[in-house]
Image 1 (tube, rainbow, N blue to C red):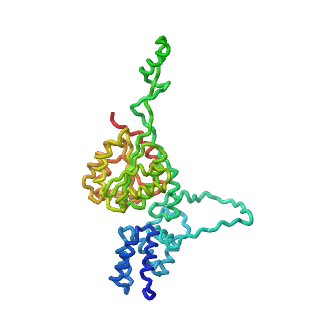
Image 2 (image 1 turned 180 degrees about the horizontal axis):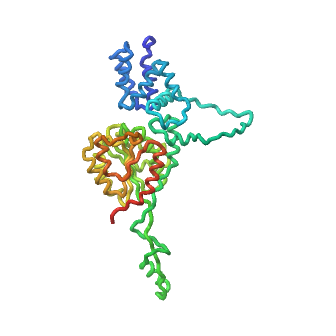
Image 3 (image 1 turned 90 degrees about the horizontal axis):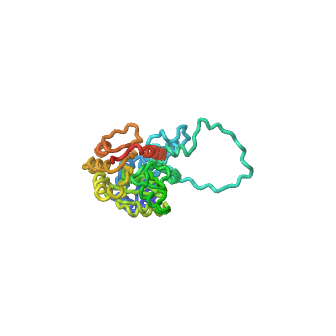
Length: 396
């Protein structure tokens, strides 16, 4: 491995594989890895393994991807055969798989990208074949139930197209304002008097009005910390779709600080919008201070954006770096300021989920809906939950 003097070049290629598999690795970490290997040495494979792991890994959930990529890249053919065997056709799709095979799928997709097939004109028209699809389902349905964390690059691109077509059917609610309505229950005295002046006050036609129906504002608070990295990128594409589909949508992201990204998401071009969002977020994939960010929102933004029966979506896993300090008080204030508060948590995808972290215990008593959000199907369920939001009314 070191005979040809290409250790630094091999480490660079290995870092590119990890980056393609979803790990946030830049040139700085590659340089640090080379320097660390010069100190630790490469005589023992175990020391080589853990030296690279100490530099390239930032979170525990990245270890499975690193482990499989290391053994494949640094010539372990037996593990490569086991990884490739994971991609044989399965009857129940990827919904029932555990995390390790899913991570292997991402590693193999990074190591062996599929080449684009040239278009070929068939010499003969294809023969029609009748298939019984009673026990099968489409790839689109499989993609809807695939976890964002386990998707390959190609599946993520397809999922983003599906998210661009999703809509949130928030029902209209009755406001305190009135609008002209010939069949309204209330008589509009001012409009009736103005109409009578046109006829010399001989005839007074009664003008009627009824309460105006309007969509309530939608406010989204999305967690972009390190533990939410894979999911938050997909949610931003979803927020871009709903921002351009309806009015009065205000979006915030938070990690260690709160950032308003509403004006960037209003751009029609999704690439330009995402570029502006990435430039505006200074704490992407960092720590999490949920209580501090909610305190800033309640002080600076709540009176501006939570009027007129607003619906609030909080997208977070609830893992607070401040161990829930002051979080319950800020969540209670937020809940009392809006019409409905919905918490979307990707950790609910696990059947054995328990509210053990301090942040989760502090937030849970102050939400109206607690829903999972880890795939396209869960966002469809969110739309159904918002359809029932008319049941919640603020006290007059």
